[in-house]
Amino acid sequence: MTPIDLTAVLKDAPIGEWLALSFKRDRIVAHAPNLTDAKEAAHKLGEAMPIMMKAPPPHALIL
Amino acid sequence: MKLPFSFLPVSSDAAFPSRLELKGPILALFLENGNNRVIVYAVVDSGADVCVFPASVARDLKLSLQKDKVSAFSGFGETTQIAYFEEIQATILPMESAEIGADQEPISFPLYAGFCETLEHVGMGLLGQEGFFSRFKVNFHNSQNFFEIV
Image 1: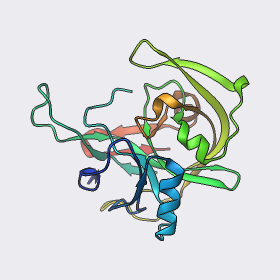
Image 2: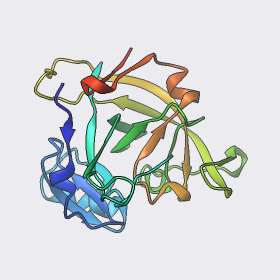
Image 3: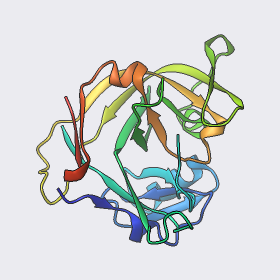
Image 4: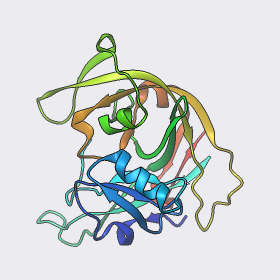
């Protein structure tokens, strides 16, 4: 199966900020230090269902 | 429900000089607390004992976290971390890909989830044993780039 490739869309994402991805995951609609601010900015830009995440750190995560 | 694995960017380093990406079982989760709603990514993590999310998610959902529902846990380091737990509603959203159609039904379930400041840097939730693997059968097909939740 073809995996979802988020590398391109997250390539230049601001690390440490909350990102609002489009529901199709093809672009960052908005970003802000605060999750709610990023989500509301995405809503104002017409993205009704943004997916919220932070840009991953440049190293691997062992959780 | 079948879900594709996702690639996230990562820097190469001395141990993995040609690595540019990491592949993980990540899903989009619609979380609700009454009329407050947010969609976040969560990692399906069989090594996590419980389900936890960054504290920002609790603030966005306007959860009033109670000190009588606090739980301590630890991760890879020695530092003990604190999570505040609350009951929310969760829905696993189908994720379309070239081989998965849009006809899969979302899966909704009540989730007793923890929220902690120390997960802020991750920016994603963790779906662990208590509350997720205790509820669903999960089959990982890593080499075929998908996982299945039954």
